[in-house]
Amino acid sequence: MARIGILTGGGDCPGLNPVIRAVVRKALLAGYQIVGIKNGWKGLVQNDTMSLDINTVSGILPKGGTILGTSRTNPYKQEGDLQKVKDNFKKMGLDALVAVGGEDTLGVASKLFKDGLPVVGVPKTIDNDLSATDYTFGFDTALNVAMECIDRLHTTAESHHRIIVAEVMGRHAGWIAVEAGIAGGADVILIPEIPIDLDEVCKIIKQRHERGKTFSIVVVAEGAQFKDGSMVTQEQKLDAFGHVRLGGIGENLAGLIEKRTGFETRVSVLGHIQRGGSPTAFDRVLGTRFGVKAVELVIGKKFGQMVALSGNKIIDVPLSEAVKALKTVDDDLYDIAKVFFG
View 1 (tube, rainbow, N blue to C red):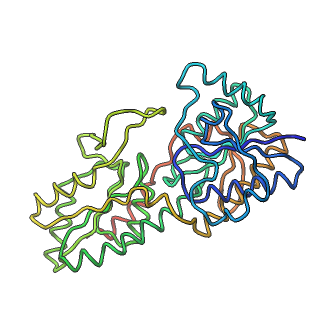
View 2 (view 1 turned 120 degrees about the vertical axis):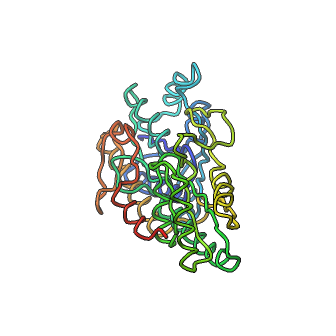
View 3 (view 1 turned 90 degrees about the vertical axis):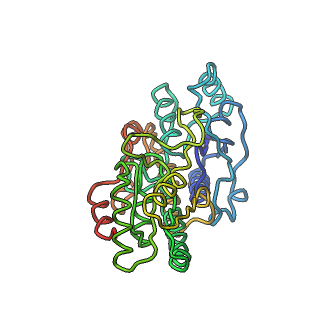
């Protein structure tokens, strides 16, 4: 009986378990066995697996996170790990692998396909920054969490006559910031794609006060940068994919706004709250559709492909196409947001 392995890598997000459930149910229906690989690429390096069957995935649809666990392991980083991946792939008796992840996880999947492994990708990231798909699952849930938080910040900002800076996730792409900002009625939205003009930010806030508005909400993505190009980080240590740990732009920005405007300013960092909790209906359905399509690609031996959403259709695209460049916020959407600034 043919065997399919499945792993989830990178940051967790709502919708991973619906994908796992869909892959298992569709694969079993097609007569395949399923092997769950624990903790992303680390599990393939260490030959760490768990059994997956109907009972295992029963009841996981509404749960956030991933029952398989995850890590930020890069098998191309440590000497010898790539060979371990290939050896363990054979030891597990796998005929195909479904890799569920974002830019980094699928970047590894694309390389492994070129190195001869039969791999299929499923796009996951709350940042919605993967190319070749209209949406990634996890984004809608994170977006709604961020919007609700902004809604709640409005009431306390207005009551205390404060400026509140809400820092949301988004390393290189500001999709959460701009869409949650629009939906939550933010007065200023700052994203990685456009350098922060502090003078303009303070001007907008002052103009609001001149019109009688005694509070303002500023939404900033964690990866937003000032005009000098500096990125605010918690530490300079790099992870296995060469990324620094971001955090602190909100606190930095709040201090500068208060100093320049004289208005009391506070910061709220949403952080991993955006990743957690039960997935929205949209993410449950999208994850399910992605999982079913991934197994169909395996059955059709269409390896080296990633499932994707185009309009309302689930299609497949080359993994290499999906990870060659990040999908960033388009100017039209940000221009819409700017209509409501101030």
